[in-house]
Amino acid sequence: MQVARSLASAGRCPLHLLLCFRSFHLNGHDQDHELLLLRCLSHCDLRGARQLLDGSSSRGDPDADVVRWTSLLSRYARRGHVDEARALFDVMSHRNLVTWNAMLSAYAASGRLDAARHLFEGMPERNVVSWTSMLCALLRAGRTHEAAELFGAMPDRNVVSWNAMVAGLARNGELDAARRMFDGMPERDRASWNAMIAAYTERSMMGEARRLFDEMGGDTDVVTWTTVISGYCRAGDVGEAYGLFLEMPPVTRNVVTWTAMIGGLSSNGYYEDAITLFLEMNQTARVAPNCETLISLLYACTGLRFPCLGKQIHAQIILCGMNGPDLRDRLAKGLIQMYCRFHVLDWAQWIFIQSSVNCHDTVVWNSMVNGFAQIGRLDEARWFFDRTPFPDQITGSTMVSAYFNAGEPWMWSAGSVVPS
Image (cartoon, rainbow, N blue to C red; front, side, top):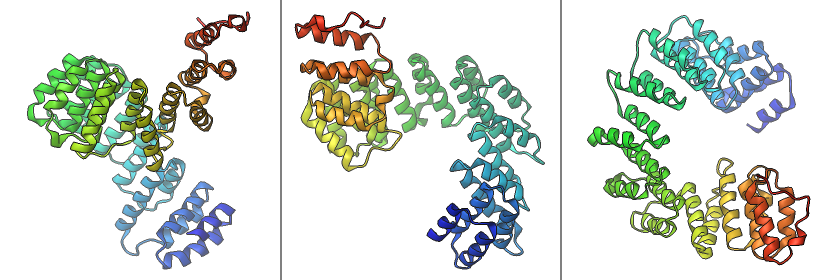
């Protein structure tokens, strides 16, 4: 594999790649083959790519080749190599409907609507998967009118097609149209109900959401319960959320459900209850927390001024490696706010410098300004104030209050203006 990577990165000509591939393929190195093929496709060397395909084909079994290369096309697309996936599609000597659908789905998922439509219109045959992929592409682009026209033209529809319309219309703010679509469904599955309930909870229309939840009866699943519990929490009705949480069969609750309830308690100011529920989750239910759980606990610790537990949570985050790029900013924000509240400014400043939230999040900058101001380190507070990229009224009023509390109102320069 290392040799293949070296050749691919070094820009060797296709002849070197093909000779190398032949030796690899004889020894069963399929990953090396994929890398070499990707190299040819990336450099638009379709002749070299075709030779690679021919050299690894299953002699006398073209159907097996189609399955194999369609699977590879899908893998390329999932990794973001959509152009390479299309190049592979073009050089394949045999394609079936699954291959066409895989390429259509790749375009739809990557937001290439025009390319998806062009491919869709050129398909030699289509099935319900083809139509639904095109439908999802239009809905994802917000083109609900065109999606409705396409849905009306579909020769066959299944519950997945109907669900796509319900969810897509709701996602684009057309809640009444989504409900009409839901009511008109010839059959519904659990995903249909969950999509409609989620649409209502996201708009805090908890009365409608609860009516649908009750109408489902015993057909609810953990997604249904968690969606409604989260909706009540977002609407500020923590009592109703907790009552529903207690009604939920304990064996049905998973870490997402527990975290939704803990986060709801924490975000609504019930910090002690959030920590108590976490202890029940961890010690009684034996459910391990995830990163979302720990973020909610950080805010609970901040609200309670409970530094010991906060530091333990920080240690747990580090030990478990819970700092992926999708969570890093929110973790950093929670930790900075917590340490500023605890007046542990050296730690807060270190996290601030290491993270990317210092580029755009005014709440984090305000935390740093307020943290230093609270302990009388006005020079540092002013340093952060002067560099806040998007100051708001809180930024300015915090700095003004700090100078007045220190008995130094004259330090607030005449040129400084609190944003309105």
